[in-house]
Length: 119
Image 1 (cartoon, helix red, strand yellow):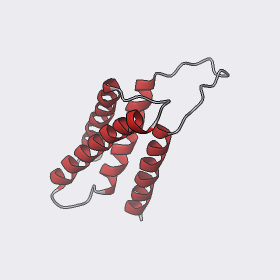
Image 2 (cartoon, one colour):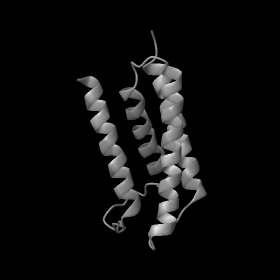
Image 3 (tube, helix red, strand yellow):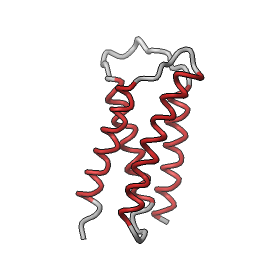
Image 4 (cartoon, helix red, strand yellow):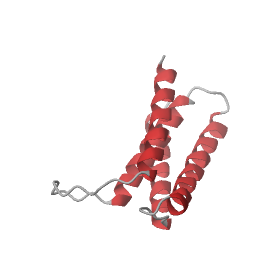
């Protein structure tokens, strides 16, 4: 049951990040708080990676699955950045966004290793 929850959560996050990255989002003038674009990238990719790591937490050959998840989420982030530059006129590909994605992925792996891998 728990694995299914994390799987569906990871799939929904993947879809939400894809849609959120490729649609035009108007800037809201109502808020007074400025949230850095890079913080959003770090948070989104941290949550996404953590969810995918939790899906495969109980598999044998854990290190292989962890490495594969980290690699695939990183590649996914690069593909999204490329699509932003190619498919949209209101978004642009940004190397700093890829680095922020990597920071989020790394943060998730560190958090996961510390809190979920203790025996």
